[in-house]
Image 1 (cartoon, rainbow, N blue to C red):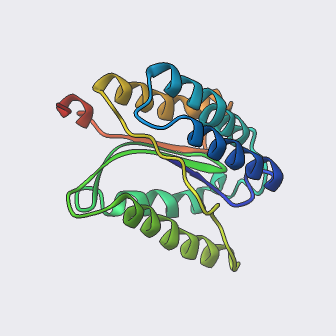
Image 2 (image 1 turned 90 degrees about the vertical axis):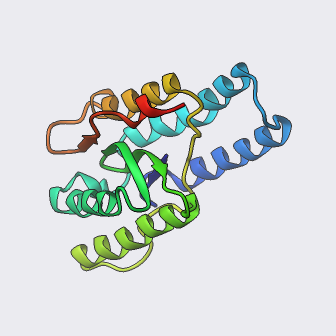
Length: 182
């Protein structure tokens, strides 16, 4: 899953991406063939990640005190509401690989993360107003191989984005829950 700061993308670029995605999804009902999934990620996920890695906007999360707020919040309910596998806190966005615990929905967990951290980040900056873009990008892990590939992407994202030490945080669980997948 990925979500980003509200100012991380130009509004018009984000609006265009969402419109294109809506049209594409209407013409490509699930279940998808592998070629459809590859096309989806090339057209939408990869473009979004490239824009986010460009570091537009305030880049709030590159500041150590603010990324620590994010980091602590993401780990807080690990094992109770979800089980984390890996995460990367980038200057403009967050990548996280996790598995929900029974009884919790994706919407509940994401709302909790985004609401809590928005309040804490605003408090730390003595600021008010929205912090996060309303939506998020999620991806269902369909196999252990897909999980490992996603994990590797998350952990390598700071290098891909050419970030310096201190501009990001990464975390990973060992041993991997992916090894436990059926």
